[in-house]
Image (cartoon, rainbow, N blue to C red; front, side):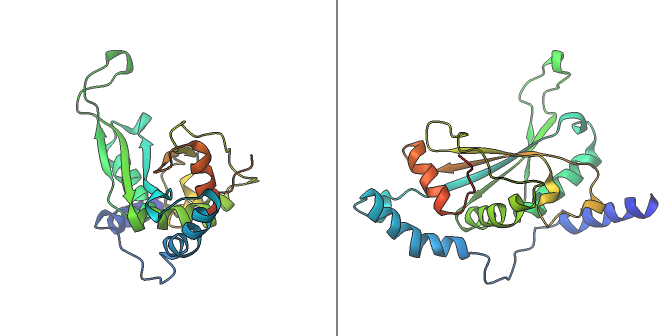
Length: 205
């Protein structure tokens, strides 16, 4: 138990500083493929007149609700370090804007951890999500194609952070889930689904 606790401390310290950027030349391969292959395909298939009309990923927002650990500063730090490792970007704590006695919630209390990824970082995370993380889900058969919001954005729930190889199962405190919201510039859900499909999203319906 002592060794495991020490390992957790080491992991927290390692991820407590600024997340390290990868030097892997393949890191931004999806963004390059989007520009060189997917954009021309969509322009031909959808009849877009110029590249600015072609839908793209605007941002990806990850949100981890703290739930039963919102009063435990050490657990919050561990969870934050994990999300930092997964995204490669510093996360921020979301604070309660007002007190709600029924939920034992105090104004200013930490209630969630959030990361917003844009540009190259968004495409790099999306690439790892669809090509590495989701295939590691047990008995994975694809994700629902019906979780769009009517405005071209897609929401996905991750139940286990250890599907990301950046997280070691031996070092985690507990299994934690988080939400992934993919915000696109698409005008319709149909456009967004076509875009995400070409980017590799494994829809099952």
